[in-house]
Length: 406
Image (cartoon, rainbow, N blue to C red):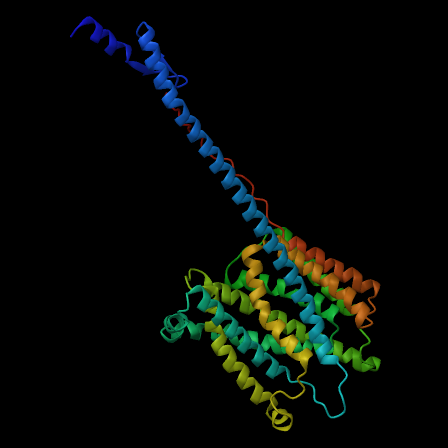
């Protein structure tokens, strides 16, 4: 090899700098070496610039997509929250209005048992539509696998099905005898019954703050009950009104007990299960429909024979049944997109809104004791559902730290 060829080969040799990635020429340079190094740098620099630009564009695009997703999630969350408040308030007020609406002579009051049966049918159809959408149209296959081939799973859900059927009939009966505001406050006793059944059936422990909130809740409901507040939608004598109030309170207490037990029992069944909530609702809906139908003819066969299955139904009654059936779907959306704090806010806000609307539309006259009791119930609801602060425990033994060697 000649000296010129050897010099040319040495001039093309370059190494990378360990610090910044810039390139240095180690061989003494001449004109040809500078030109070749400059060409090499000019070839590599645009590639680095282009890749950096692509990374910046990708990061900015991902951050903008993340912001769009967050804004969409927030919009859905608050929309679901408003929908839940509207459902809570609207169902109670519409149900009370439908039970106390003045009727023409000879027109019967619609039967609560038939309303519960139709509501269960609507819920079943809604769940089937959701399952068909989630399974890509394979509704028959899903029902075959989880209903027909799983009779024991369906049998286990007969207990909550029966309790929910009884609960829904009790709610109609309670709102026939109680004003909407008093009902809305007293029905929060389901928090107390759920906690008690959770402690017994699920061996769940509660903090001192939760037990204090349950005591405050009980005191608040008791104050509301003895306040004597009520609407004047129907002109009854004082003795009959007091009797109806007592019957309504008993119905609310029974409904709160059935709600607490069935909810805890349902939670116990769902633990460790891979079946979706919608399929569980279908499994529970089949015995619910059967039980509701038996209740219709066991309780109101004579009235049905006289006035028909849909005797006394009006557009407002159909609205009540539809809102109650869609309530499960709304709660499912809220559970998916909203947190527990927002759900508690919806419950508390619905109590306040119910009191205000009842005062305006139904001539409800809350006393000072009612206001105090309702306030205690709202405070107890917020206290009970507030997240617990977890204390960090100090380790008993000293911890070792890994030392990275460079």
